[in-house]
Amino acid sequence: MAVLSIKKNNRHLLIFIALGLLSCKTVLQKSDFAFAKNTIIAHRGAWKAKGVPQNSIASLQEAIRLGCTGSEFDVRMTADSVLVIAHDATYNNLEVEENTYATLAKHKLANGEALPTLKHYLQAGSTNNKHTGLVCEIKPSKIPGRNTFIAQKVLKMVKDEKVERYILAYISFSYEILKELKALDKSVVTQYLDGSKPPALLKQDGISGLDYLVYKLKKSPEWINDAKELGLTLNAWVANSTEDIDWLLANDFDFITTDEPELVFEILKKNSDKQGYKLVWSDEFNYKGKPDDTKWGYDYGFIANEEKQYFTDSLKNARVENGYLIIEAHKEKVMNKDFKNPEIKSWAKYKTQIDSANYSSARIKTEGIADWKYGRIEVSAKLPKGRGMWPAIWMLSENRKTVGWPESGEIDIMEQVGYDNDFIHGTIHSKAFNHIKGTQKGKKIFVKDPNDTFHVYALEWTPEKIDFIVDDVVYNHIVNNHTNTDKWPFDQKFHLILNVSVGGMWGGQKGIDDSIFPQQMVVDYVRVFQKK
Image 1 (spheres, helix red, strand yellow):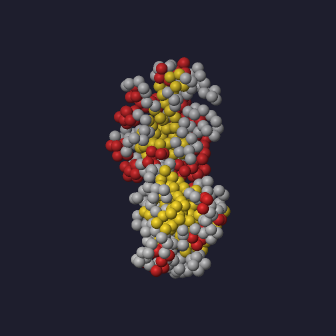
Image 2 (cartoon, rainbow, N blue to C red):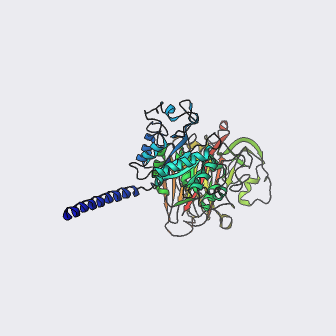
Image 3 (cartoon, rainbow, N blue to C red):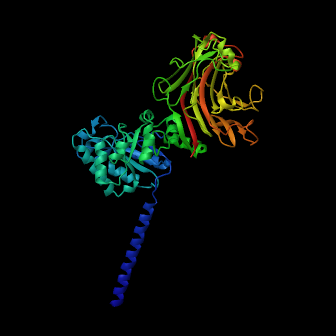
């Protein structure tokens, strides 16, 4: 009997050890979960490309399959206090808050799924998932006093299901809900959606971060640095265009909430060449009126190259509207303020010999405001069209007034002349290489439809080389041979210039077609990056 008892006890011990090992294995498997190392949050799941319903288990599973950092979903509460996944206040024309789950669940989603409950959603999100966090948006209730109850119930369910590690963030338009969550558990990550509160107030109230509409962040770009300095997480919704996605990536957002996760993955892959760069200066033109005078100044009058336009600071010639910078040339008579001016230097005497111009335009610049030594400059623009037009995006050095041109150097990021409409030129000028001698170092590239389509004209400039780029294609690569400043004065700060010229030594070689005016260069954004 003693032996039998020992064997029996040993058997129990072995069973206990085996169960313990299984338990440990389960814990180890769960601990494998870690948020994916990208910025992508699928908005209501990844639903668009596959045509599955938003906020469905299928859209969640697709976000997991894609490898998104997060999958966002919306939580509401029914009349019988069941937490369900639904974006709108109504589901199948039934008010969610005024109907029981049983009533609502009679109506399936478009793919045949039952209306998901939060419990089912959490279970799906913690099954076969090693990388995609759950971003839980708690929708505010119209019923007074119910917001705190919903917050409590959501948090309790997450804990009951033991899926806290899968929650990337709780988000809401209700400040009350977010504060209640923090009061219940200080460790939860919360993000405010409304876009109405500055980062300092969020920090003061214990909110972990912000998740604002892209356009609201573009209108208040200072909030981005404020949030970073305060240690708040940065998220933005809903970024579906390449322009918005690029802007958020350039500004080092922690998260990008999008209906187009596949597009963001594509852009991330293409942007691998920009790794190590940080956005240091930009103008997204999300305002109205004159170009921002904290970023841009003007040149006036006749400037150079025997161009026929008179540069002004008139809104007619330079303005920001509908999110774009417009630099516009007009055919009109403009009186020359420098006519017969004795103070004009001899080399520019032609400026004093013409009493008026027949064209007006604008030339804006960052001179005296912002300049850079090395970096990546990007300008997204549509160009004017027609014989006689000569738009340019270019740079001059800060010592030009001291040493003179061309010794000081010039970098022409983009030049185009109207009589050769579909070719874009990228060129450097120096004492050794310049157009006066015909030795300038320049190349051109064919660009399809530069007038009605935005293209990104870029420059990548390092101590070793200058690359001229259109839409991520390098078409002119110039190497620094480290000889002398006659050949390479490009080791100093340069400022940026944008202008539309009319006629001149190059633009006017085949005359000017007066029937084309007015003509615009439309600029979507200007961004300057430098190495971190």
